[in-house]
Length: 385
Image (tube, rainbow, N blue to C red; front, side, top):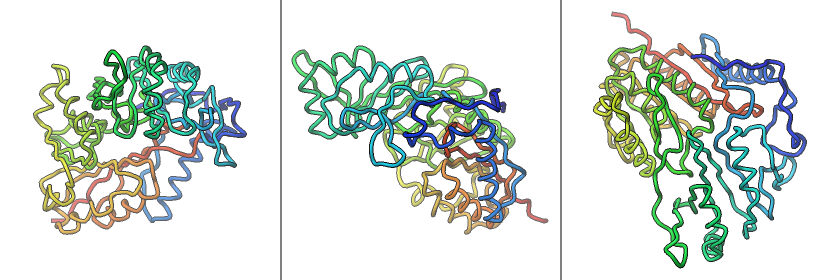
């Protein structure tokens, strides 16, 4: 796993440094930012009496990484929230955006939307495809459908989704109608060094950066590969961003997810695997629904657990481990989180269940900001004969 090279003394210029709340570390060099994040995580784990082998940092670069970002639209201004007011800073250039997304933002800003307030997700796919999700109130959606010309122009340059239900507008010859969500390739993951298409929606949750996500995929695949013929269960597979890298190294994987739209994307991604990777599809089992109650009585039939939970952490998902004898618990646990505080709470529980941290990695895919992703690899301590 290799970070991309960068100038450690670089500071990223931003004309909105004093007004926009999107980035908090613009006054620091990139090296200082990484040291601050590393020390913050180390201190958090230390306060929880969690020993680590040291915190490693992986980075795809100091700026210009994001291929997806949500913007707020308010009173004709399109941008991010201000530092000291519940107001929107009108932004025409952003150091977080990849060059392709910056170009897309510049074009999108030429549209004048008859909407007082809403949110807009702009996305660039792995091959430069443009997507937009217009998350507006129903009355504003109807206004745009009836107006016609804005959507007609927009659809010439981008794939459009509208509303919480991710509907796709289409022209029937006389008016715009909305049809069901449509799966397209908006993201990639990685299987043993090969880029693999992930089918999802513009509105789907993905990691924010294609470049940074490659480092995540490499990390997951490498860690699972340390355990030959591992049987893995995954909590919260989503569209499969971690599922497929883990599947490349595992002997079998059970992917658990409650969101139906995410699972539709995962199923299509698996069905569309290239010929050289098709055999991996036979190793995957997908479980739909509330898996914490229905899928298993315990985790004893698995060698490893993979989890990327929401901000609230794993909560009751870990309870079945307590019911097992130490030697019955899975040998390893891979935990990924963008919310270190809840992760630390879960790591304390895992420590009490006999797990110790072998790797701890910060993946810095949010440079200039206080946010970062954490990946940890834990192993169950060997029981004495």
